[in-house]
Image 1 (spheres, helix red, strand yellow):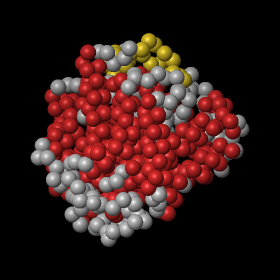
Image 2 (cartoon, rainbow, N blue to C red; image 1 turned 180 degrees about the vertical axis):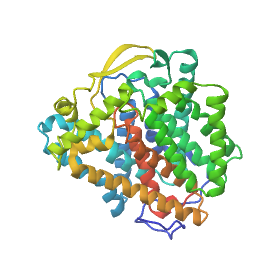
Image 3 (cartoon, rainbow, N blue to C red; image 1 turned 60 degrees about the vertical axis):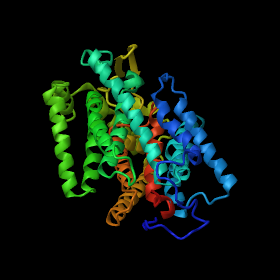
Image 4 (cartoon, helix red, strand yellow; image 1 turned 90 degrees about the vertical axis):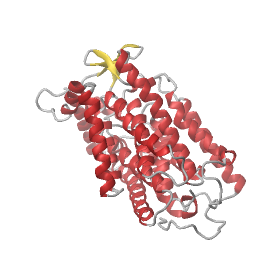
Amino acid sequence: MAAVLTPPAPSTAAGPRAVSRPPWGGWRSRWPLLPLVATVLLPALPHGASGGGGPADVASGVAVLVCVGRLLYLRQRPLSATAALVLGLPVVGFALATVTAADPAAALPGLVRYLQVFVLVPIAVCLLLRDAHGFRIVAGSLVVLAVVQGITGVHQYVTGTGASYMGEDIRAVGTFGPSDIMGMATVVAYGLLAAAACALRTPRNAPAWLRPCAAVLAVALIVPLTLSFSRGVWIATAAAVLVVLALTGRRQALTSLAVLGAAGVVVVGGFGIGSEMIADRAASVTRVTSTPDRSVSDRYAMWSAAGAMWRERPAAGVGLKGFPAHRDGHASIGLSSGSDTAGAGQEFRRQALLSPHNMYLLVLSEQGLIGLTSLLGSWAAILAGAVRRLCVARSRGHAAVDCGLAAVALMTWQSVNFLYADIGGPTTVLSGVVLGLAAWWALSGPDRVSAV
């Protein structure tokens, strides 16, 4: 894993070299980023809950094809040995869980989805990003998506046209609808972290307005994030922000925490935006034995079912896409048949509970210890490499520290959020983009990271 961040000597084996170019120009040479930008922005389009691939999935496929075409045309070595090992490690668990499943044919769609999100899209991101400016373009797309969805979500809360929550249509869900209740919260959290990283370490030669604009956007996005009433996203965002602030230095961390605290007081206390509901929602996480929230009870029941599946087949699990088929045979009688969804333009609907809403337990139950170890090993290597490179970049006054902060923040958020969520819905492909951004920072050669 490369840790040296100084510009290297010219080389033909490590990919495209950092060349002198206007830091905020050169759009003609960046057309390969268009599929990645489309992959980030297209989840905002309304998409039916039928389970088929959406526009963002198609765009991610185009990105992979563009990547393959460029590699064949330019005849470059695609990845270093370390990057290939780290990004390809999860394939072991995916393949084993597919061939050992009770119905391998039924597990094939799961194999394709896992390969797309956790292997192919991250690799495509790593290879299509030429330098730090390309990273910023993709991260900026996350901010644009977050702003659009955040404005939509706040409008839903104010006008009472959101998803149903505690008998009122006030839950901010953006264009994702009540069937994908965490979609808006996820993209808003991504954009908030990307904007915060830019505000904490603004790129050199950036326009003077960029830093204050990024800071204002990061603080403003707290509002729709709060109105999403998504407890797991709140926890993941708080954890990611604290990690990034700890890596920026004590003085800046204290200043930023003071600003965030003041913003929270103004939003919740001063304007009274959902203060009672927010407090009740946060407290419901710990109410498991006495008057628990139904969603909390169901979540813990599914976690228990996932653990029972793993104990039955500890090595390779029950197979990809196997959780729904084995759920009833391992869940307690207290598990409800589904969750109620309504509002935001959708009639009342009973949505089946087909996953444990915990990515680690989902992988453990369907892929066993082998799959979980390979996947966690890959993610841990990416996160550790990203933190290590960020620390080196800070100590040397590197120009791309903002990229490192964004990479660490997004990877930390994804790691924590997977404790309360798993893949599913139109935002799933964004998990692959986030992993790719973090992997690019952690694993790419110094010639690509060093460019402004």
